[in-house]
Amino acid sequence: MHSEEVSKTQFKARALEIFRQIESSGETVIVTDKGRPAIEVRRYRADQRSPLERLRGSVIELTDPFEPVGEDDWEALS
Image (tube, rainbow, N blue to C red; front, side, top):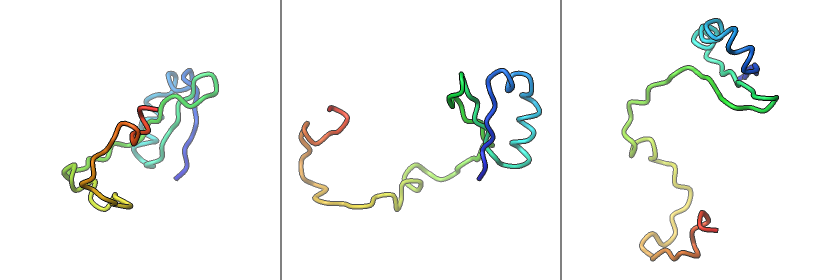
């Protein structure tokens, strides 16, 4: 899916037009700040599934699920 990029200044001036474009096309718009992506604007999609249903099938590998996890095993602590 194609994403258009607009600066914050362009977005401010054309916000309603951009919103209508997103609603009709389903494409996303990336709002940039000083040339760098800052915000992604996309059409809202309600997901009525429970959190458990959304996660179903997302585990790639399950090895020793009942083994204790030590502090050295957590990448976030590094």
